[in-house]
Amino acid sequence: MIIEPIINGVVAKTAHPEGCQQAVKNQINYSKHHQQIHNGPKRVLIIGASSGFGLAARVALTFGGAQADTIGVSFERGPGEKGVGTAGWYNNIYFRQQAEAEGRIAHNIIGDAFSTSVKEQVLKLINQDFGGQVDLVVYSLATGMRPDPETGEMWRSCLKTVGTPFSGKTVNLEKNRLDTVELEVANDAEILATEKVMGGEDWEEWIHWLKQHNALAKGVKTVAFSYIGPEVTYPIYHDGTLGRAKKHLYRTAESLNEQLAAENGGAWVSVCKALVTKASVFIPAFSPYVLCLYQVMKQMGLHETCIEQMQRLFSENLYQKNAVPVDSSRLIRIDDWELRPDVQQAVNKLMGELNDDNFTKIGDYAGYKKEFLQLNGFGFDEVDYQKPVELSDLMAMKP
Image 1: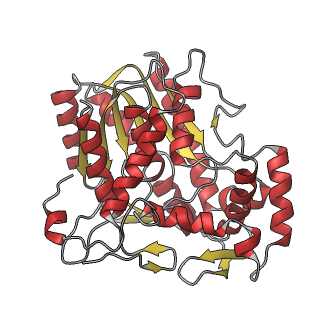
Image 2: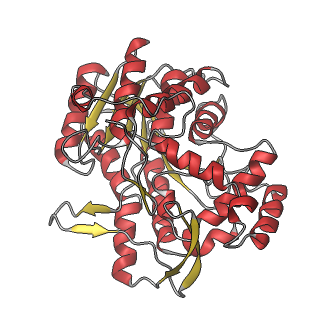
């Protein structure tokens, strides 16, 4: 069969395995040939490892100088009656193949990261191949729901405002147009549920569970990811339910840092730049800003993708010789280039000019959509998309 990209709104319904392989190769090539990570971790657990910042972190730590062995946890679907499977499924497979070819350990655990059974699988592999402990835990889980560990009921996050409603434009990738979206005001229960899903509680539970089983090495570090952005994004990211969840994440980092500091370890949140990820495309009214930001940062030679962000995070921040550089809120800021005054001034000018008719020209819509397609294995010049793919061959591949 020939696999073609099918988009429903901002959801990719198909993925191309060979394109996913190319995406992984491209990230590996970048990490090998840019500033290397010195004195980096050797035994790493990545929770949410199959795409976006999680996958990029795994690539950077394995191929970007640290030569780390990794365990990656993700919830992905393989090929079967419902289709060829998800991009993350193939990212896991091709990452493992490349890592093992260079003598690295790369275990993939496919399952619900909130479950005890997955934690037990992780612990088994840590004991089996990592000498019983990990040096770094990367928390990059992006999901819309999380089960209550006591009742089994689901907490569901929501993208709403807090206080006043909000109206704005958002990109419809399927129709290649801007749609108007209205964000309602969240109630207390919705705010709490979003904190439960997207805050720091599960990150903290993972660290506590690993610590209870003596699986954290002395000096262990852990990092989670966030976004702040400029004032134009505040109604969504800073003042809405997302913002409440991120504040919970920051408080969690402080708590974990105090606990890990006793063994010379630490916990941080890294604030990343605005990017096209499988999570970010769902955020209403965020995409027009990203279109303008991409246009400006590319013109200035400052644009970074996930792999460039992660290589810089580990080589220049988390594992550089001196203390980890942080801001007044103890956040690592690799969104620093995005928030440069000259960048934001140029972005604001474009935002004032952008409308329904010119957004594909004023902003970098072509680059935005290409990055979205490449998240799912499409849009690579090196791949022959007219070459048939055998489903039986895909089903024989194991993560």
